[in-house]
Image (cartoon, rainbow, N blue to C red; front, top):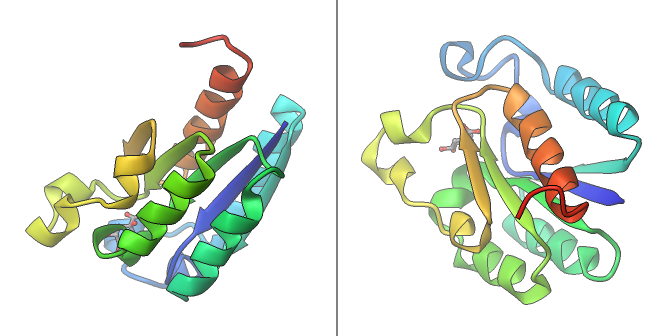
Length: 147
Ligand code: DQA
């Protein structure tokens, strides 16, 4: 089982950017959490982060035929990118959308998610723990433990 975790722009700035919204944990802490989750579930978890929309589209296309599930936090591109939505629909790999903050409780422009329209689940406002939740969910879904 291979899960690809994709992070969009500024997620590499975790711990530095707006700690009142995103918390004090760093991007390195997120990578550690992903490694720990992979070891716990005995699955392969790959992480990819980019600040560039086209690179994110390229990585989603790359995933076709290579990964079983995608966890994606498109960050600001969540609210703007039809290209990321179309890439997720093109590969049709089960995908879960994660947001560290509770986007529903923030500015109105954060309450539209294009990528979310191609995802089977959205987890928001759970901090970094949301990534673990998303991986556990996909692991259970792909192992037919949940419908
Ligand atoms: C975010 C929420 C987005 O609105 C924002 O642009 C981000 C991070 C989150 O994880 O809470 O960069 O996706």
